Length: 163
Length: 445
View (cartoon, rainbow over the protein chains, first blue to last red):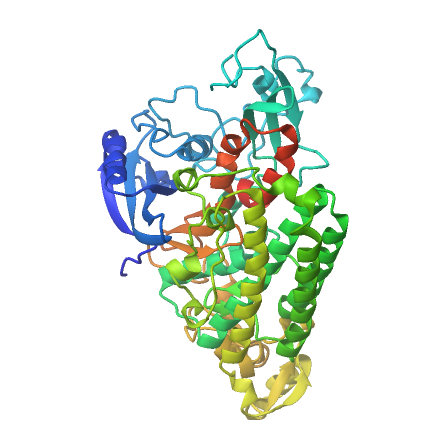
């Protein structure tokens, strides 16, 4: 199958080198992080089990042309070896949170990363292949009697601006 | 975060906006840190509408994922259907016949118009123009009726199949569309008169929610939000898919990247989408059915004929089926679906009247028997109403996806929202959030 320009050339990069590679790509003009996602290959017995995919685009901001795309694949396991790409593209912040939330992939320089879609009390990582689709989660909220210090309200503390 | 005002021991306070808030359509929670009415910090919490689309998709067969895609961007479900089907077809190496491609383009553009009408209408309502909202929802209703005739449902369309679309265009679709296009143009022009020079509206949207080109690029923003900054990026033009390279249409761009430009971009795009549909209806190649008119019989009568063994007579008739199955007969199915028998369902007459058709149908429907796509991985994107809607699909050779990743165009815009709101007034939250056109179904999946 020929590689379409939308998909771009595939590059397999060691997980420790992910930031280095992405920074080099950015310096080379790949200025848009289109997507960041992950695939869990545990049932296929692959080690390390996760394949984290960065999709970057060389974008001509003057006339809106897509000058080419690259797909960076990093194989990672449970150890936090990937480095965050937040400093290169601010959108990586949310995308990394989603990858952590859904797959439990850690980023070495984000030890206190927060979930994006699920709530803080959620147990496990839903898109891992060993997470059963019908799994029930423990009940949270007022019924459990736990009201004070509920983590979902923690962000109400005025910590956003650090003042 | 730096502020221009010197610190005189001022105190900021927190305001929780959402997830259920009358001025915020869609469930999302914004936690604002306010200094008077000025926003100093924003935290945005999403995920309230997470329905595990990606997890569900892994448990379904290739075709059974299509109904789930309706629930992504539920204001323009047809674009999601088409985007997913194109991604799967790319992996499978299937090419849809031209008529099917044109029908997909028409469906996509109808959806784009409904999406833009909803976005403008809802934001206008939140800024006090209830009339515009009613006008636009009225126009959207006409289109929903058209979608209903085309797909059998107004919103949960599930219109595409791997290798084609559900059925052919209904009878006199072009005439019906022409009548509706007039009404939509009227509504757009009326709304334009009500809003574009209306001071109450313009004062709220002009100069608020401004995003710079560099920031938009850094956040990976696409769609009308990016075009409002003056960058004419559109997947339909940058990577033409289907038959988009055959149409004459413009890509409206703004200049300042504020809420007003986004409103103008969307208004202009409605007109461009109408133009695309009109051209598509002119260019669309005729299906087989226009060659020889056939007698129409109820499907059960054909079924009886098949049981009696009158199979050669069956060719003379077209099956009259339930409204939701219209356009799936022998006469049209060949022109809207790929000829690959291993991937596309046979015409209804075949299923009803002969054993080969029935077996072909069931082999495609049955679990672990259906379409099998060789192990591969691919990404495909279409221009959604909010920007680049991408699907990254991994196949392990089974009858369903191993992994489906949907790249929601909203997510990058919402990730940039805190950046847009910092330093603005609290009243600016409403127009800025409105112009993001956040669709929680797509954002949270």
